[in-house]
Every structure is written in structure tokens, then in C-alpha cells.
Length: 499
Image: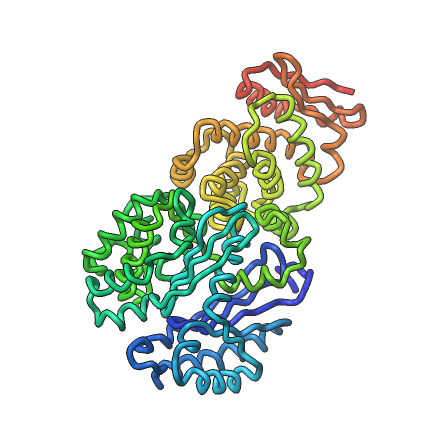
């Protein structure tokens, strides 16, 4: 299909949760699938289930109407595989079986009612799918329950499901935050999953915690609005959570960005987060946009695909869709690696994968007007739906491609904000790669086959560009000028050697 990768059928997941009913359609089953469509209905199925034991008629009606709408949309999008799951509200309510029967009729297919243990497992698997080597505990806060599960690299530990989701807490506490805090303290006592987060990361999954993170970004003037991978030291999160507990949510900045249906749950989500931090003492709180749905997808992947680097897969897909000649990126990866090795910079963890990702993304802005290619590429990369990369990594990639187009000293307020996320050494790497890209694209015009017939490497106190005999005519004043800029950055003289 035009504008999409044609490597497999689309796959859709409908998640019938306690607070929302959501449809997400993915481009295909892959390590880093793009979302084709994402829509939700805040049906509130879990409202009052904790005290009445039943799903309300109004909530069921809204959920069923959403399912009928989603079925039509899936048929229009010619979805290849559709999975429909239901979680805490349908699981706990006395009339849950009745609702599921009506839901299956609306969808025309079976619905998977997943247990609390399986929900915890899938949440952990979702976090693993979205991060590079995560270590700590995943916590998925829904409307009806909180799932906690340890994660260690690609392994999911034993999870637990606790009945302290936002709607359930509001219901059981009769709207009293003090009573809600007492309930949470009692529920969190003596669980090994709490102890497992000490000194590690707590991966916060769920819409309420993403909404809190949105408010925190606004309050702190954070330069990037992406939620996935947003990382804050645990003590700072605890302070902010207590602020949200005490304050009327309507006075908080950026509250308009939070849906009206979710605003009443913010304080309850803050109570749970505050208590988790007090008891678990994690190093930091990391927001995860990947949860149960992404866990389902990850579970369906063959083992070989699970081991693929999600960042490099995502960057590869952008290269395939947007570069003038996608094969050129492979030439560039080898060419740049030769330069970096010759420079002799200290090796850093993850350096090679970030360098390769930058090469894969280096030509995605060519269709824009020349004056705006840098800014447009920066915004696309900084806000892309990448997984397996933290926010400093996003800033590194975005700034590298920005300077590849705009040059080393081009002014940009957005770029200045992103620079705050990087160390001086990382900023030096940005300029090195961008400078190399600027030489490479003058030599190759973004076409494969030319760079392998040239080399760029440091030799003593000189940065030497060597051209094979048949490419001597590629030497020009502009090439020399860009080579001189890169050599100056490296503290060397520049030289072009003709074959």
C-alpha cells in the first residue's frame, strides 16, 4: 500500500480495559511496528465495580458501541489479524460474562479474558519490547488494577495484580484521598515485586501515569514532549506526586492536555506512585508507552525477531520509506565507522548503534524545502514513535541529522532545547557525525556505490579524503570547504588525495 511498508498483514488489538476501550492497528507484526490507527472510548467500565460488583448499563452500552465502531474500522482497513482482550473490569464484575457475550456478538469473534497474572506478564513483556535491556519493575496502572512485575533484560519475573486501579480506588475510598492512601499502603505490603525495584528503574505503564508525566514535563519546562522513555529521578517524582495529591488538578499547568475523563484519576494515580516510591525506593521512574498490547505483539514474534534491536529496525524502516536511495545508508555506515575508528575517540556504551541509527536517518528530510530540511528532520526524529532509545538518544539522533542539513552553527530554538539533554562529549559526537555526513552527501548525492570508492580517515595530524582515480572530478571547492570544517573540529589539517 502506498506510504506503507509492504512486508506483512496489518494486525489490530482491541483492549477492553476498566477505564477505556482502545483500538490500535499496527502496520505489521514486527519488532518495531508503526501504528496505523489509534482510537479509544473512555467507557469507564470499571466505575463502581469495586462497591457494586457489577458493570453499569451505561458503561456497557458505551463499550459495545465502541466495539461496533471498531469492527467497522478494522474491516475498512482490511486488518489481517485481530485480537480482542478484556481485563480487570470484565474479570471482576458479576455480570462480566454477560457483557463478554454481548461484546463477542458485537465483534463477531471470541474475546480473550486475561487473568491478573497474565496481564502482569504481558505488561512486562511490553516494557521489554519498548526498551533496550530494561532492568527493574514494570507497573501497569489501569482503572481496575495495578500489575507489578520484575523485568531483567529479556526476562519477565513473577507478577502480581492488585485491585488499586484509579477507578477502583476512587470507588472504594468514596472519593477520599486519605482513605485511598490507606488502601494503597495495605495493598502494597509484603510483595517481593516492591523490593525488586530498589535502586533500579520503575517503568510506569498506563494512561493516568502518562498524564501525570505530561504535567510534570510542562511544570519543569522539559524540551521534549515525547512520553515514552521520559525518565525522572524517583525523589523528584515523589515530590511532584505529593503536589498533585494536595492540589486541585484544575490549577496545574497543561491540564487541558489531559482528557476530562482522566483528570479525576490523576490524584489517585499520584497516591499509588508516591506509595510505590516510598516502599520500593527505585532509582528513577521511566514512562513506558508500551504495555499489554505491545506485550501481545512481542509474544507473537518468532524468537529471532525478538532479538532484533528495535531502534535500528525503526530507523531502517524510516530509511526504506524516506531516503532517496535506501542502499546508501549501508555505504555510509561503513564509511563513517572507518572515520570514527581512525579518530581514536574513547569507546562509549551504545556508540555504534546510535551511529548506525544516525546514518539510517540521515536522508529522511530531502523532500522538504532546502531551508527547512534541518528543522523538519529534527522534529520528525525527536518525536518519532521509536522504541529502544532514551530521550538523550533521541536528542542525539535529531541534532545529528539537523546539523547534517543546517550546518554546525545554524540557530534553532528547538535544537537549543534538545542540547540540554546531552553531555559535552555527546555534543562533540553530534558535530563529528554531522560534519562527516555533510562531506559524504556532497560526494555521493545520496546514491549508493560511490562512498565505497572513497575513504575518509585521520592519519597523524591530518584528515585525509582519498578518491579513487575515476572519481577525481568529485573534488571541488565545496568538498574542500566542508572537509576543512570537519578537520578543524578534530584539531587537524585537511587533505584530499586523488587517485
